[in-house]
Amino acid sequence: MLEKATPLVELQHIKLAFGGIHAVDDVSIDLYPGEVVGIVGHNGAGKSCLIKVLSGAYQRDEGKILIEGKEATINNPRDAKAYGIETIYQTLAVADNVDAAANLFLGRELKTGWGTLDDVAMEAETRKIMGRLNPNFERFKTPVVALSGGQRQSVAIARAIYFNARILIMDEPTAALGPQETQQVGELIRQLKADGIGIFLISHDIHDVFDLSDRVAVMKNGRMVGTARTEDVTKDEVLGMIILGKCPPAAVPGPGAIVDA
Amino acid sequence: MFRGFIARAGIIGILVVSVAVLSVLSPHFLTVNNLTNILLQVAITTIIGVGMTFVILTGGIDLSVGAIVALAIVVMAVVHKALAPMEFGVFQWPIVIGLPMLLALLTGTLTGLVNGVMVARARVPAFIMTLGMMSMARGGAYIVSDNQTISVFPDGLTFLGDGRVGGIPMLIIASLVIVAFAAWVLGRTIFGRYVYALGGNRVALRLSGVNAARVEMSVYAISGLACGIASIALLGRLNVAQPVAGFGYELDAIAAVIIGGTSIFGGEGKVANTLLGALLVGIIRNGLNLLNVSPNVQLLAIGSIIVAAVFLDKLRDSARA
Image 1 (spheres, chains in turn red, yellow):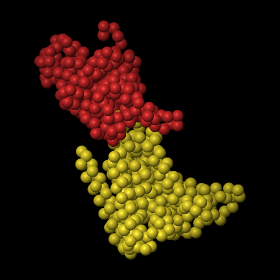
Image 2: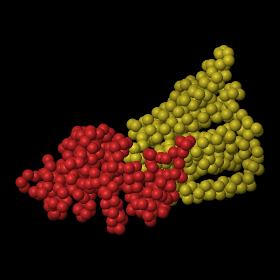
Image 3: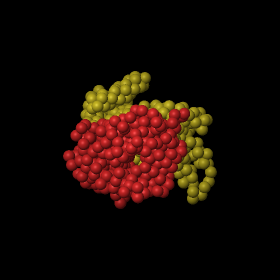
Image 4: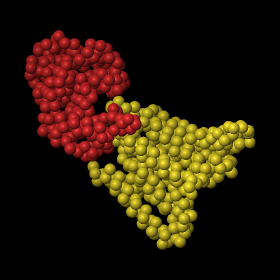
């Protein structure tokens, strides 16, 4: 089924270097609608850098990005948003000093007929979407600094899906959360998947990745070790890919794989 | 918002106490003349403080405001004196009065914009950039005026500083209008929202697709524009333009903003409270004058107040974290 469709996103031969360091070296990866692709690897393996190229936060040195088969120009976060690419960052990129509605609409504020901020409409929309995502959320008028990690994360997720994201990048979405909140985020990912949204899930936590992903892609030292359907590989095999760069038979090896180790 | 309320209640309390104490200590304090005088001085601090509030809300600082006032005031005076003897027929007023005022506003705005570009684009720390600009603009003011004091201007040029509308000094009306307008911009417009967000989390703002550098540049230009307006007011009030004008104004403006409860770390504060902060600084200065406290001790006092206000702000921040 996946083979027939055009991939939602294709990253082809992406390279990104800082000074002499190759943070991302010749990495290719794709993502289909309604699919969750987990990207795993050690700290500094290049996962976050790769994904920041797609979200427009970094500019790639080489390589192509295709969205639905067409080459896309992504030079900054605004370009990425125009393609329906939304990112939920590890560091919870919210403005702490303003409230949930202000964060949800940051950069895309609703305006009154006079061109001024329409806080009433923004709060109403925020209540609507938060009611769906996190019915317990009630602190609409407080600066988000006063909210819990999970509440802040739900604000960030609400922001992404409110604007009809087709491609969602989640960079360690559960790193700052407790177990119950992590479970909530998991539910949410399944819900978004059912809506046909493609998700890149970046995580340290291999259990999360196995629970939620259809495919897993492993990076090591800025290179792609390989990708595999989660059902075809074991956790131990994936750990072998992460630690040793060794590609099991069921996986498609990438340029970073150690052949016949 | 709670913080704003406490700040406001706190300052109003201190204001009331100061007024009461000074009324007892000096018979000259509670006179119409003296109070008007305070309000006029406060009006200029307020106007500069409004611009400063924008800058500090983004987490920046503008040390060059006093020097920008001096540069703008001498540009205005020199251009006016050069044009005044000439005949322009029906355009006499716009050219001789209007053009110098416009140039004062432009000088302020452009100087502020230079600060903004260097801070936002070249990433020179705001403290260093505006410290350098403090020296550059002051030097420019000496050069433009050729070290001369320029005095005696026609009514049109001095109207903002010493005119009255319905018996109320124009300057007081103007400063209130400016505060109200700034409060509207910060509270109701998208730009205002970005100013707060920039002070809260610059990266979040940028990742939201907002041109954060442009917002940052704008706040310094606004601060410069406020200095331009203040220079017109000062020229009218004193009927004199000199290159030493505005000396030390940055201190009062920053004090007004910080005492008004705006966080020096950015992201929190209200421009209306800057007005209260300016009022408190003005009353303290005036009181010290009436009590014959030497200007040297006044400097000491204002400096200590700024440090104390920032220290309290820091305490409040760590208490919350």
